[in-house]
Image (cartoon, rainbow, N blue to C red; front, side, top):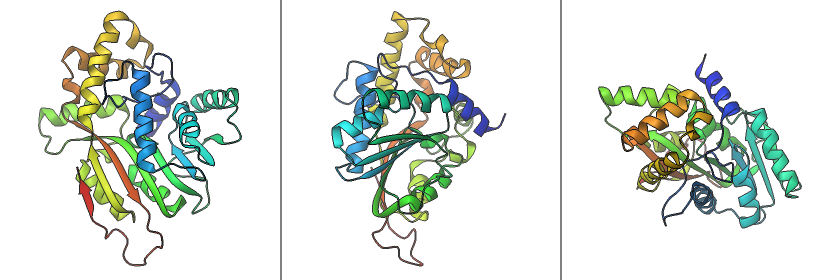
Length: 287
């Protein structure tokens, strides 16, 4: 099975870990949210604020999962239009049902489409957001190029993403390979945040900022998952076996599975007017 086929299968079979919501992310735990639902919503708010979502915007959600963040963004930020894309027909169907039930179909559209081959005209969107999904795009650089194409001048790209920390060798590289296999990360996407920023600049973006927020993601998520498993030992049995094995091992080792990994919030802007011959020259910042 190819990496892409595995990711498509993982998307089809993924079951959310949220208590009530259907978010599929690790959450943002700054401020000590009590549940994964609250932490997942906090991550979506963080990405929406970083993107500067506002009324009048046309927003593309790349890898929209079950659409929970699209509902949140529509209600909280009031953009004119949100289009969520996903390669999983099952997740798209569930997202559409939710959007319809909440009366948001006039503002939120969910479509089956690839984030690396976006079926939209150039300069269609003001913002492109990928909430913990770009790690699966094969490769992520094709997504950067596609996002550049569909963004209007001055438009913003925002991702929350999982990356390896630099300097991994020996057993660290083996652990990285096992995690990548479990999480469905293509090998081409295994590079640290300094390279991530360089690739955004190479795609033509400027004002690139890549910020590590790993301390507010991995450790608190692991503690929360450990508490959940004590209350509900069968929780992980409802997930993909390979995926569940990785989470169970991470809990058993106190989060060792996350030690070689970074979690970033990345923002970048397409120049208001494209300058020929100067793509990728803007400087990046690392925080």
